[in-house]
Image (cartoon, rainbow, N blue to C red; front, side, top):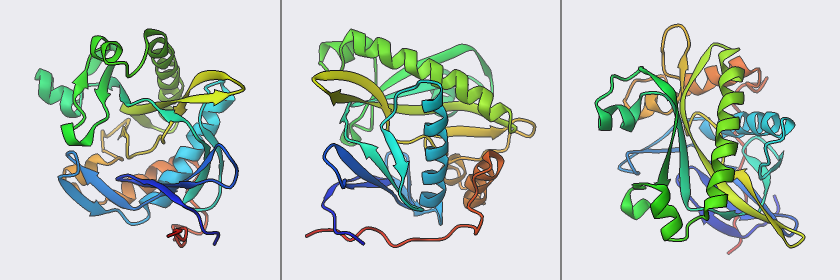
Length: 254
């Protein structure tokens, strides 16, 4: 396998220098973390499944005009993406009360919200990704008002599309986290969807039973974590035909 220079390693992915200028190879790990990395573990095959699920959803979003950093999947664990300047914000879209919102506001988990609610979190592991307001974001220069407008518009479009897509296969999109980046092309900049969309950063419940099919199974020690991820892929029709197979990670350049 070609030797590539490692650029960054996060909790769930490793980024390597891409084969062409302006590209990045995104490698999906099986590592799992929760509660700001206070809980750590391995979910066997998670990287393979997240790579396939994120590829599928990014392609579908691209078909309806949502700009993304995704180019193509390279193999079972890697995909080629455009290099972007990541905006240090997590944009969370909530449709149903769950997780920190339910705890913070004293709302019973599973309560359908009057409308979709968007929250912002500052990406900083040392500070445990604190929730911030638009005032914080613009005052500290993390994003301009027009950038936020673009991000909110894109987030709501993603929510509308994914809610319908997933409902069609019996899954309720409870909430999800998006990240965005600035893509520079021909002296122009545009905001695009970056990172990934997978059970790692979405809450996905069975529409009939309410059974969780996402990383909450790991967070809450519910068991059958791998099966939850596999069920999402199965319903989307993208579970690898040969089952979960591993591939060797990229050889790191020293």
